[in-house]
Length: 195
Ligand SMILES: [Zn+2]
Image (tube, rainbow, N blue to C red; front, side, top):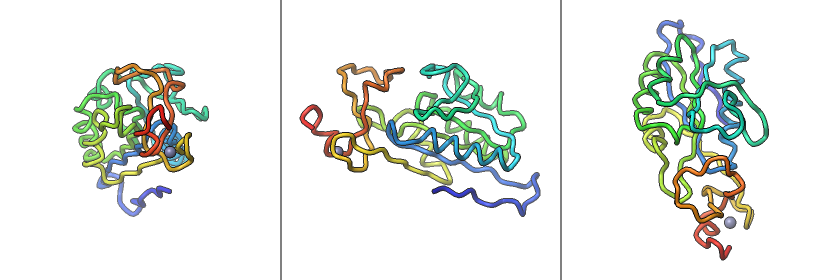
């Protein structure tokens, strides 16, 4: 369980920002963990802004919605640079589905953190083919804190880290189709249809 570092002893103008990454496969609870951290920041009376790529229109244009229907209002962005424009004077910046944003997100997060903001980024660490996804690997490198959350393999019940695609499309992005995926462990992922 991630516990927020305590920076209360520092006056606000000298407080340092930092980057947290929450990553994992589909059905691993990434968005739930992002929402948990953002809600705790709100309880601490911090100003929170939440962004997600405009490409992700799975459920609702403005809400981050996780699979358990916990939701939180968010702003859709087309490029990572827009996050800098919209972040304003907030204390905490949340970004969901970050794997769909451009590589410049790394610079954007560094800039926000260096200006004193807490930046929490959630996203898929690997695509369906098991390759690092979009800006996520670079974000994991520059973040102060990285949390890898895991799903449960639907085939054998082990800890799962892969998003196995059950349909044959080779498109990297197959949106709105959570039915087309299942969480699998390393062994069952590589067994494919034989698992
Ligand atoms: Zn398995």
